[in-house]
Every structure is written in structure tokens, then in C-alpha cells.
Image (tube, rainbow, N blue to C red; front, side, top):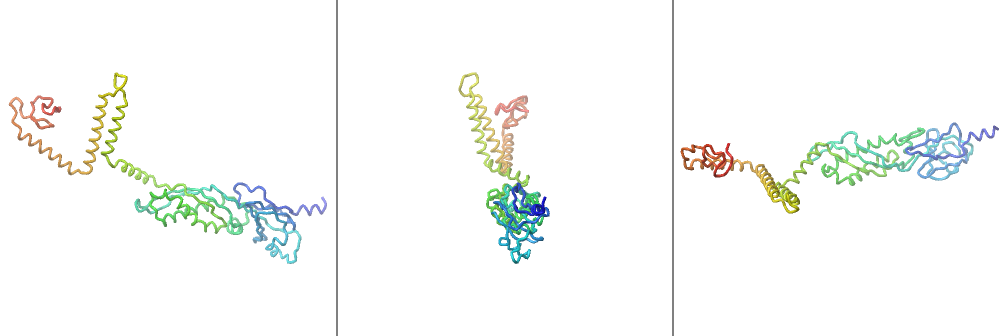
Length: 351
């Protein structure tokens, strides 16, 4: 190899980054001890930016386009290199390519519950998660504040910090707006918009732009969700009388749909009678339960009145014959024979 070819092999005449990678934010062009030829071609593709760094100081930044490097389009580097008179010799410089495209579908979520004070439930521990998208908006700030002079920088290296910032801001936002916990699900869009506005300056300080942020879910503690479910059931079953009527009507409808026993069609009257009886029993039982729940004192008064009536009947009833002794029905209070198994008045079985 001749001297000229050797010297030429030590010069870089084309600078570009063809494969940005899926999650690579910054890529340092490999110089390998070589120098950049004055007049070299610099190719910066769409969604890229190229940054020239001279002895640790940020010099010129190039956006998308094709450039022929010269002192005219590198004013800062020219000043740093003291090329006052357009000196055109090869030079050394570090070149960084920054990926400026959007990074979408980035996940965020609460590792630990977020505390919230609710007017109805008191202190609550909430969990939330969602997605966001961001991009590098200012490569200079990003280089200075985040990645420094590393040879490569990926999304994973910064995603943890961004995620924690979102969760912290969400906690502050929930404390500021004071929306009841039961209304949070209806406010996801509004909360997402407010959280985006709150996060934008924090992202900007790192050279980023927060393109979008969405809250996908805010979940309540399990015991609170169970309490809400119980309250919902009570709301549905609030009118027990109507519930009993509905159950009776449905029972009658089911019985009417069944064919009569031993015939090709028709209504099974025996079954219908049973169904009506069951329906009436359900209605009576639930109505009685509701009455007892709402007026326990009235129930006690009725019981006392029934006892008084029985005692009065026992007092005023004519004395039974000698062969009937002094025995009274357990249900209606009428005198009955000593050996009777059923009351001749009300027909109820005797103990």
C-alpha cells in the first residue's frame, strides 16, 4: 500500500447511520482513531439528528439532509478549531446520531399503591396504569442532560425514570383535583390531558417531548370494590315487595309453559296451584322480612296482641265437658278433647 493510500484510509469521507435499531436513542459514529476529511459527506436521515462534539464540547447540530462538511456549515466547530482562515485539513471530532422519531406504546404503572383521600371512603390506596409516547425534541439538551458521551443509549436506560415521574405526578394530580373515587372511571380522558400538561415541562427539561399519555385504568382496593358491589345489590333489591311479585310472575310463566301431565298439551293445574302457592309464600315471607326490618316494635306489639287474644279466648271460652278436661288448641285457643290429634276448629295438628 502506497503512502497516499494509507493516508486516505485514515480519513473518513462519508458519515451516516443506516440502522437506527428499534430502541436505540443515540449512536456514536465509530471513529477508530481516524480523522474526518474536510469536504466529507454527511447524511442525516429523517427522524435523525447529527451532533458534532469537539473535545467534550457540543459544536454543530445537523437535522435531516445531505451535507458537504466545510467551515461554512460548521461555524461552531470552526470557532472551536480556530479555523479563522478557512483551514481545510482533516480534523478530529466525535459524531453522535440521535433518533428523533416517536417511541410509542411505552408502559407506565404504579409499583406501589398511590394514596388518595376520598370524602366518602376516607384514605384509599389506588393502582393505575397506562401508556405514553415520547420523542427527542432537543438533541442538544438531551446530550447535555441525559446520555453524555456514551457510545450507545437505549430507551430502556431512561424509561424507568420517565415512568416514575409519571406516577409521582399522577399522585399529586389526584390530590389536587379531589374527584370522588367512584367518578374516576368517567374522568380518564380529562385526567390524561391534565397529566400530560403537568408532565410536559419535566420531559422538556430532559430534551424530550411527551407526545401522548393515556390512563387506561385506576383500580380501587378489593375490599372497597366488594363494598360497592354490596351497595349496588341493595339498590337493585331495595323494594322487596316488587322483587317478590316479579319472582311470583316468573314462576307462573314457567309453570304455564309446561304441558299437563298425561296429556298432549294444556296447563298442569296441579303444578300451577303449587307454583301460585310458592309465589304467595315467597311474597309473604319477603314482605314479612321487610316489615320486621323496618318496624320491629310494631311486630312486637302484634305478637303481644295475639297473646292477649289467646289468653282472653281461653278465659271466656265455656268450660269443656268432664271427659274433655282442660286442653286448648295451640293455634286458635279453642277447647279440644284431651286425646285429639287435630283441632276440630282450625284443623291444625297438636303436639
